[in-house]
Length: 316
Image 1: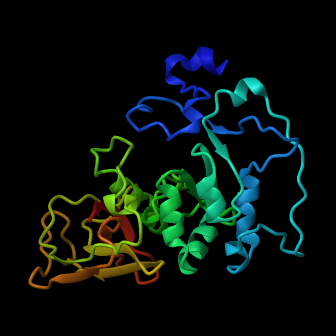
Image 2 (image 1 turned 90 degrees about the vertical axis):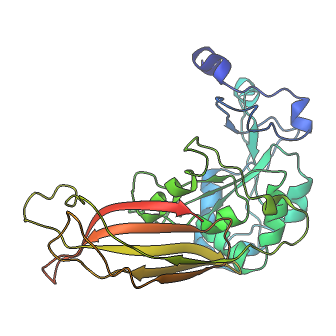
């Protein structure tokens, strides 16, 4: 059914190609690629379902960086279960998801074997000096990260650490237009919003490389014809101000810094801010850092929250 509907758009790997390097982005351009199970030789396999990967949310930080995955209640490995694989579907699958045991074993695996990690595992790896091992793994293999299942309100985690370690698939709850999703939109402005951004060259070098740092000075000058917040019809004028936020990372941790302009009252037509004041930012990892400009409407009623008007995210 998939082959008849998708036709040539479906990427079907051949057995010989599964033994070498992964296909290049140009080879996969316009293609639909499947991730699932490929045939295994034994009765059991080490396939990693989303449910398995989501179990990371229930582990403590130290448990989540162990090389062998164990149950929380005890020190015994999870019991293996046999899984039936449809041969017809398996032959259409390129990426075979596997459980993480150690970076050494993962690097030696076939290149079409990949891992999925929840956001809690991402932070744990980075905080326990495993970033470099993860970067090396991602030079030849694929990693996918995703939000914690505990985010029942569909909020999002920061994708910065996953980008900084070279992860190729950084999944977000796109149904929630929060600052993290807007930051993601900014990341993909780098390539004209084509859906693919080449990872920084420093993440493809062998050995430890220091992130590129820089200093940025920002002045917010003025605005023009700023609309009212979406869905708001009452009131004469808005009271706009601008949040300038740098999303960055350093030494395995997310770093966020925000500076705010003064509020211009009752003027959305041509507000002019105090541009003699400059905002200064020290960027720790320029290859992945993103600066976000957010225009807000100051609510004249102290008990009410300020309203979002518009935002733009710019990769450093």
